[in-house]
Image 1 (tube, rainbow, N blue to C red):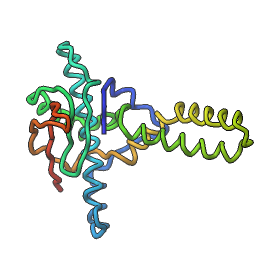
Image 2: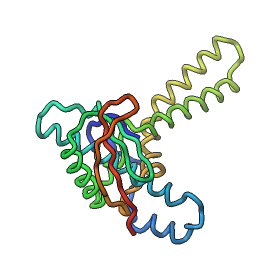
Image 3: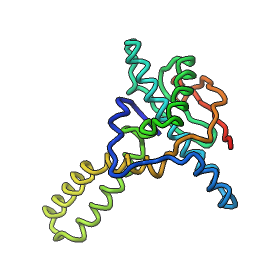
Length: 206
């Protein structure tokens, strides 16, 4: 899931090198295909990366054309059949952006798969804050002042660490380079509140 966009280069600082293997997901399916839902999970990870890359490309297009479009008005949600893109965007521009994003991802621009406003970052931050808060509650005296200080420390540490850890989670857990995806169609639709949206339908290829 994504909202907003800025610069893909901000996602490139990781503590160890990332190398994508084009045959990794295919090999997993060959060996573990008997596991129910495995293909759907692998597909969603690849769709998630394509969603992020598409938002990056749309932002780059808007900046290059200086048309005043705002990437921070876009949001996305990935499924096993494609992804929704919420917000005002021209359908033809989106079609071009998806194909460019897929091409760039599979040709080595792997940083496009990671997005700083992805919901993964928020989830990691909430888990960190909750875990640290529980830990502080156990470790510190039970007085109200000490407990409040503990909560503040937990929130501060989580705020500091969650962006980097969230990007790591995206890189290695919630996204995968879409070597096995083909874009089928891009169709205009509406969200629950009747605001403009699009659905990018994909299919798995071997």
